[in-house]
Length: 89
Image 1 (cartoon, rainbow, N blue to C red):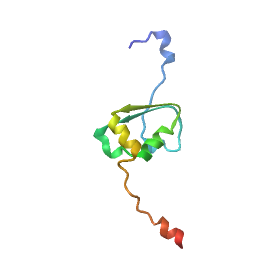
Image 2: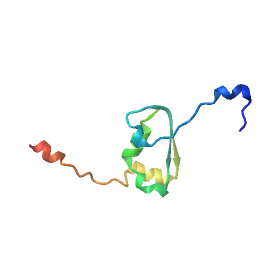
Image 3: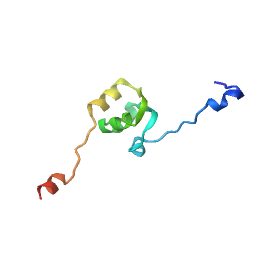
Image 4: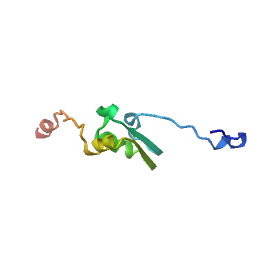
């Protein structure tokens, strides 16, 4: 798309970052790509973190199957912590 010189001030730079690096931040708009090719990243907690970064607009782009796996938490692994032992002390 071509912009006339007089409209160049209406363009706003866009940046990309990872969900991991965005934790604790908030953005006006967030676009989250979800694809089966990256099935190891289809985790509910990552999707939740990504969605909650968007202040006004969140767009999910991807395959229905990938979004379904992420929503259901199909790739969740158990966390191995010693929290139970520490709390029992």
